[in-house]
Image (tube, protein in one colour):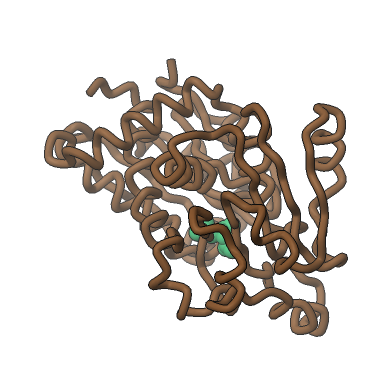
Length: 307
Ligand code: NCD
């Protein structure tokens, strides 16, 4: 039962629960009209202590398409936090107004503190460089629709693997399915964190780390591109040096398998040339749509709304 639970990191969901959420999302995709009033009278609060457009709007569109309502803020400077209110107090107050909260915070662990201080479901919409479970659900639904499976896949993750929370969340989710292989493509400075490598080693899951994408492209079923996370750098110079390390273009796509899919959590900066957008292997805009539908399914499940 998902009713009343929090979603702080992807591992909070069993693989069976992930299947159920994806199944409901696909039912909504097939017949959105059927669901347009199911959340009538319910309120989602979106508390974004860190800037975001698409994730916040995705949550809001999801709730509105279910017939529910939305309150919240998109910038902590416009909330009482700017008056010095603690996150615990903010959450206690908002819990009196809303039925469910989606929150994004620059500090790792902030959604967990929130969850400990409320009796309504908290959805982590991104906490620092830590996790972003609803992006993972978005990625998983996209993989499911394109590949029809979550196992026996070779997954290349490219770009900022150090700070990219969506990368951390997706690897943690995908390592639970059998026979997946991971290829981490990044400059040395932006390598995947040790704690993730340690877990892969411990579970004897195959992975490799490379600094060039050309050599591995032909092996991939999925290419997960990410932007270099500018806001997590301590100095601009380091960011400038690394920002254009990888640019996926038409030429590189020629090296890839004809069934490979390219996904990206967006926003894209330079890492995928717009000329790739028309390639039928480019799934990143489709992925955005999936994100809204999977959030609709998640909201319904956490609120305990029956189909
Ligand atoms: C991602 C995030 O916020 O971590 N974006 C998103 O949720 N759509 C990826 C990113 O910002 O690069």
